[in-house]
Structure formats: structure tokens, C-alpha cells
Image 1 (cartoon, rainbow, N blue to C red):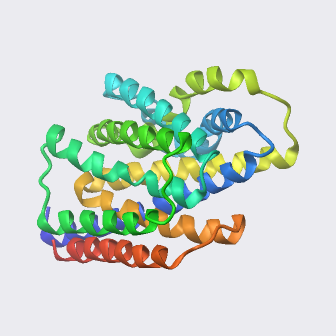
Image 2 (spheres, rainbow, N blue to C red):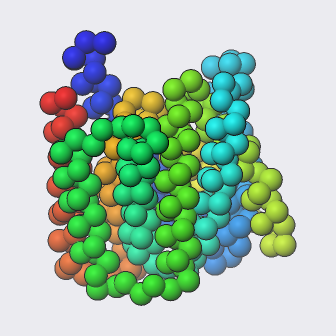
Length: 287
């Protein structure tokens, strides 16, 4: 692969990662909005059940090959870890402000980079290390005035650790499977676990509520598929610092739709996070 092609792939992976992060926050925001009227476990179950509907046009385009995986064991490991992480995060989300939940979830990039170095033998460049450091410092600035380690926070931190493990399996899957195949197996595979958790809370929902849940399914599936595509083109240690940008999106959405305040230290932390993302973009263009 030529140097110019490698730079283009890295830069494209950056764009995919940024859009994916925004879609994840949009999904979380819609789930938080709906949580007052529909139990979060029912929301998560229906989000997974609708993945096939959302991906159907892409499955038709890719053909039968999208239905088969070359790594069944890693698909199972990913499904199990992703199911637990998703249930823990959404439950914690109902007990925490959106910006706080997103910020606590930012331990995931740190966990993931460490695991990627150990298990995937990825190299951590000085630029990526600096970006990770800047992003994490930004999160600490934002958390400083608000941190209260409650039950919701505990579930979100556990979710972050388990999601980091899941990302390792996703990265391995991108070596042989398409982004659509990985998203399809995850969505379908998580239906049993999410159904068991949702069953005691299942109830008839309105058309408006179903529309919001379908929106959650679309944004969540898009976020996951874009993430898969990004990881197929770039290393975890290179891309994960961009995850810190989610906090910027969550603060904006939290303020606009949920009336959550944005103290001064939040904007200071945001500057660090933007600096982290900028460093990654510059590094991607140079290398």
C-alpha cells in the first residue's frame, strides 16, 4: 500500500470514528428521553431486535456473504461482552445525568488502549499517548465539580471495562468480517440476553414510542457499523482517543434537550478534548 493510500485510510477512519461517536450519543440521548415512559431494558431489547430491519438494505447489497462469519468464537465472545456492557450502561444512564454518564464511560478508551497493547500487540506512539492523556485530563476537569460515585456510576464504569474487552474482539473480527456482518451478528446475538432482562417489563407501547425506539435502532446500528468500519482501517490505540469527543456532543445535547447545566470547568475540559482530537487528526495526516 502506498504512503498516500495509507494516509487516506487513516484520515477516513478518523472521520468514521467521529461520526460514529456522535451517533452513539444521539442514541443514548433518545434512550434517556424515552426512559421515563418505557423501561430501559425494553428499549435495549427492541433496539437489538430491529437491527435486522435497519441492516436489511445493506444485507441485500452485500449478498449472502454478509450472513456468514469466519470467526464464530470471537463473535460469541463479542456478543456476550457487548450484551453485558450495553445493559449495564443503559441502566446506569437512567440513574445519571447524560454528561456525567458519558464522562464516566470515557474510562473505556484507557482500558481499551491498554488491552490493545497487551493482546493485539499494537504500538502506542508518543502522539497517541499525548492525545489519550489530553482527552483524559479533559474528562477529569469536567467530572471534578460533579463527581459522586453512585450506583449509576458504578454500572457505567463496569460497562466501560467490559466494552473495552468487547472492542478487542471487534478489532479481531474486522480482519476477516465486513462491518455489516459484525453489526448483524451483534444485534441478533444480543436479542436473547436483552429479551430475558426485558421480559418482566415488556408492555404495549404507543406508535410515537415505537418511532423513537426505531430511531434509537437506526442511530445505534449506524454508530456500531461506522465504528466497525473505522476499526477495520485503523488501530484501536490510534482511534480511541477520538472517543473523548462524545463528551462534547453529550454536553450540547444534554443542555439543549434535558436542561443540564454546563459549568466553566466543563468548557476547560472540552478544550483539552478538542486538543486531543486535533492531535489525532494531525497525526493521521502526517502518517
